[in-house]
Length: 325
Ligand SMILES: Nc1ncnc2c1ncn2[C@@H]1O[C@H](COP(=O)(O)OP(=O)(O)OP(=O)(O)O)[C@@H](O)[C@H]1O
Ligand SMILES: O=P(O)(O)OC[C@H]1O[C@](O)(CO)[C@@H](O)[C@@H]1O
Ligand SMILES: [Mg+2]
Image (tube, rainbow, N blue to C red; front, side, top):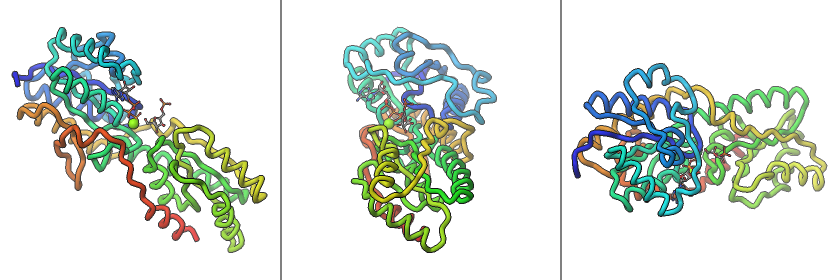
């Protein structure tokens, strides 16, 4: 592999709190090693537009505490096409960019890895998604902050729910991933968690809630993972009413879960991942993900990190139910 002097850096997919910490870490670690870093604005879309400019030490000052990403991000459906990726590779070559670092989720990693395998561009993936659904890494930047944001919201909902003796169905983000829902369910003492892949047993939910009310509970919270199809929470609400005469309110937390100042954990892990990205590139590793495994940031082969994590964790559902009897 020829010597790396100039690195491109972009964010892709949904933004996540802590992406800025990773950007800062990449830029400062690279400059410390006498490399140049070029920030690509708006993900793969910005790459195709040639929206690229050099980042210096001060361009990443005072961003460590902010959510979102100073590089902005995008979803770029055209990147699924090999022809589009060829164009992206030409642009990188024209700009004399020797390696690319992509901060994003499993989708972004698939795009990045395709660019590497098809055009030989040295490639690094830094896991950044609130969904924590990338295989091969225990953690992705933003998850902890998103979970805390959802917990804060559910705690507030619980205040009004108990004051009015109500049942709330709270929908959290995560698309097909159950990670946010399970964590929030455990941490808020929810009565139930509904996962995207599950056939929803509304009768069981109703029985659980009614049993709780009988023993003196004055509020109930059901956490629903959003899934791929919109409207799951409202369907549960309608069925609870129609079949079991149970009134409930729906609250969809939505994009507030993607914003906000990153937690200490997100800042810490993002900083470590950015540093390792540069360290490994300098060692000659030309295709890897800065994965979090067993409490450490390590370089993992890209092909171990391309799938969605699919493990279903029934023990957490049992935990939620056991602790909320
Ligand atoms: N199989 C693929 N081949 C090429 N490019 C892809 C592929 N999958 C995704 N991408 C690119 O990555 C972008 C982001 O992917 P996606 O929307 O799945 O988000 P993500 O990176 O998984 O992040 P998040 O799920 O947190 O929003 C896509 O818009 C597309 O440009
Ligand atoms: O903001 P968008 O593009 O609608 O994406 C929403 C999706 O992105 C995520 O927030 C991850 O970034 C998922 O949890 C959610 O399903
Ligand atoms: Mg994803």
